[in-house]
Length: 302
Image 1 (tube, rainbow, N blue to C red):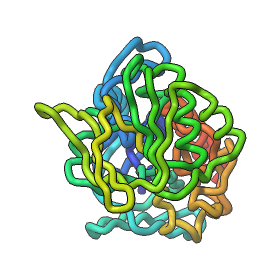
Image 2: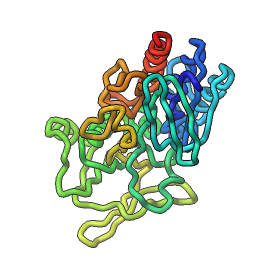
Image 3: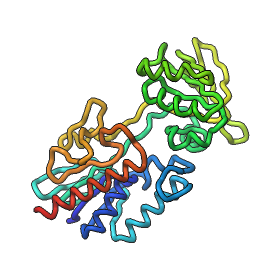
């Protein structure tokens, strides 16, 4: 039996493993895809304390090496269920794995809702971005499009309009759905233009480099040239399988505050999967710290 089983190998999960190991607890991290989570989509990270610049993959590799050096164990499997039976928690995976722990930290993260267009995955980090705070500086004095029309898209566009020469909003609905205050701020800026009722039908490249999008309005297609596309059409938390252990809010995020506690003793949550206002690599790592220390205190009290 492990002391702490951590579901998810992003910054929150790996930080949790680090703090668990350094507090004398044996941690197992179960990750279904690749360690690092959303940060691996960032070609450069320049807002992580203590490091001027590095790629998301570099940060993920460093974090993974660090927890392995500390003695954490890892498994590449997809967790489908967690069962809580008093002091024992049982984690089951799609591959048939069964792992037991005294505590569990759910650091399941989120995935960005994608446009579903051919070649999209290959262009993530190479023309397609999701975070203006993370990647906006790479498009300074350039032209970008923002796909979406809710609060997130408007907030991203406001940040981008401070850096980019032009920001083009592309909304598939007849009107923008975000707060009117945000719309007033954004559309008062001279370098911002908007198109509503448009569908992005194709991603364009020139010599393998992203060069723009094809859009369709009322059956008419046209090309919009741009240097980058920021997709802000929503995040998808993957928490439904754990609803019996941790309450979810209306948007599917774990309904837990900064203490990272759930309604189930010995089950904690951390990272972007948790209800929060800011989702950054630093806030995910902070959650991992809080959840791990809370799990250690729980185990020590058994």
